[in-house]
Image (cartoon, rainbow, N blue to C red; front, side, top):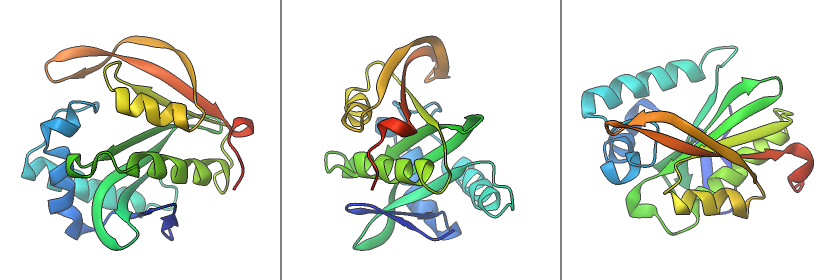
Length: 178
C-alpha cells in the first residue's frame, strides 16, 4: 500500500527496522497508560512488530495498522489503526510517542485514517473507544466531529485493573470530504 499523506504526517506500512521507534511507544508507560495493553518489553515488541508486518502483506489484510511519521522524517513517531468491526465499519485507534505529544500529530493521523476509511475503503461508520481520563484523545475525536455514544463499562483490562471506555462514532455522511 502506498503511504497516506496528511497535514504534517505520513502514514506508511510498518518496517522491520521500526523496532526501536515502536518500542519507544509501546514500552513507555506514559503512552500505554491510555492504550488497551500494558507496556511491552523489547522481545514482546519485536514479536508484535513481526506480526504487524506479516498481517500487512496478506492479500485480504485483517486491518490497517500504519506507522505515523512526520513529513520531513521517516522515523516512526506513532501508529494508527483501522480494525474492522462489522459491515462497512471499523474501530479507530492511534498512539503517539510521548516526546511528540502536543503537536497535533494524533489529530492529523486520525484525520488521515478517516479520509482513507471513508474514501478508498468506503466505510459507513468509524468508532473509537477511549479511556475516560484520556482528555487529549477525547479532544481529538471531538475535533474531528465524532459523536459521543455512551460508556462501555469494564471494557479493557490493562495496568492490572478494569477500565471503562467512552464510545464515540463518526458516519461517512458526517465527515467533510477532501
